[in-house]
Length: 118
Length: 113
Image 1: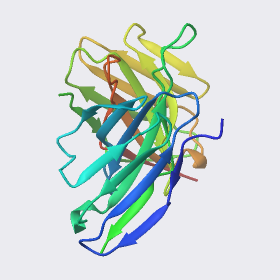
Image 2: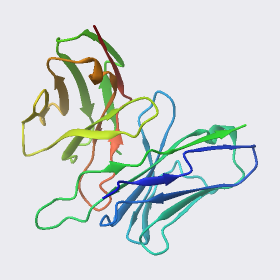
Image 3: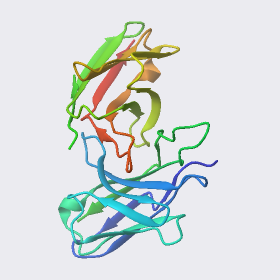
Image 4: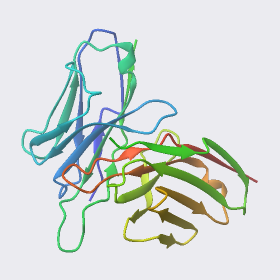
């Protein structure tokens, strides 16, 4: 169990460019979340996957944002035509499937990708 | 949807004193309430959580209390140490299909020597 991994840690891009972030959840976790965190605020929910199915998207997720989890393992978050308002920390988190010995509530975060749009 | 309010936004205590952070939530269906600690530039880390069928939970110097009727919950840190300095976030969720957490705006705790 190496924890949730995110790549890259930092991304600087020019306005209008596309960016893609990757998240590798904890291996036995089937549920994956993307959150966005701006300075001085708590993380805000963006989208949720159970296995490969994207089951919920926040109103915060505009048409320029798309997320995938093609094989139910790693996930990618793409932002097209970036805007300065997209500058934030993008956090990925995962949790395990409820089972006999756990309700699977605990959410574990990655270290995030800090996006700066110039 | 759920709305979580957190107070205070900043808190300064002397080493050895206690610190209390309070949160309120709006959705009576919420049944899971974790607390996260985030140091500068690092990931939020779960430090303690409580489910709605429990009124209080303690783990060494950290405790959380929950009042379902009033829809508020609190984090208590006793015998604070400089390494407790960080931003603390409360959160709430209903452990249904998505179980997504709604976070408070955070409390910056500074423990001074």
